[in-house]
Amino acid sequence: MSDQTVINPALDISAINASEFPVRELARITGKRSKHFQVIMCRSVLDEIHAHGQSITDAEICGVMVGNVYHDKYGPYLRIHASIRGDKAQGHAAQVTFTDETWTAINEKMDREYADARIVGWYHTHPNFGIFLSGMDLFIQDNFFNLPWQVAFVYDPIRGDEGMFVWRKGKSDREKFLIEEPDIEEARGREGHKWNVRKHNYDATSKPPRSMKGVLATAFLLFFMSFVGMYVYLYMNPTGLDPLVDKWKQWRAAPTTAPTTAPVVAPAPVQAKTKPGRK
Image 1 (tube, rainbow, N blue to C red):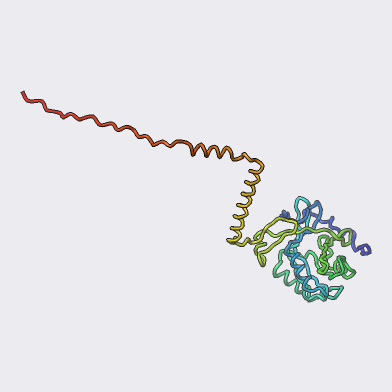
Image 2 (spheres, rainbow, N blue to C red; image 1 turned 180 degrees about the vertical axis):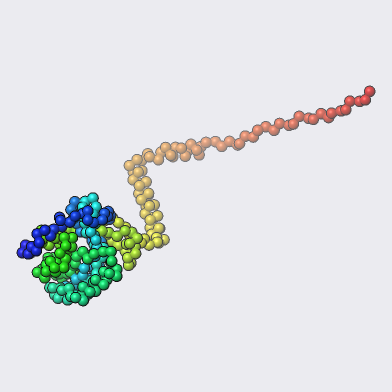
């Protein structure tokens, strides 16, 4: 926002040193990876935030996002692979507040399930009033998520819009983010075995067995297409089958001959041998 107070001009994603974070190559990304710091959110996290936001649309809800910072050949990036709902937060129609109970529950779950990860940002909803950071949102971002790689995510469950905010010159600016799609095994493990990926051609849906009706329909379609193809060919080439017809007529007119057998040769008579007489 233009009237946002700059708390620290050095607070900027450009200040992130890639060498301080481990190398990790990305795969199955929706969007284009560029040579600067970017935020990558796993599809499962985005779906979870959507579900949380759509469960309550008459008040703001919130939670934190969990992940780590890595780098690849393009530079550093933030990967968000989990989220924790702020179920004990105080939500109002146009404001949400993290309470002490909220932070206690979040930290307990972090220790229990995400000991090797970090809290990399937070999310909240703006039901039917757009994507921006209000004065209270900026206060939360400035005081609780003020590291260069920490972000804020806003989702409007009524209008279906969403936006990611990153640190740039001491202000929280809206920035495009990328989505990491699940692999086939992960997608099949999700409830319903159904997964439709937007803007990608990954197919991770469990395929049902083919029915007999489908097989018969396919066979009929192939037969029909073959018939139509033959009709078109004969229409375009009226004499196209003449050589085959001539061959068939020659075969039918050819005389049939009885098989010949080799002549039987009678064996020569055997002469009896006589013993010479005694002298």
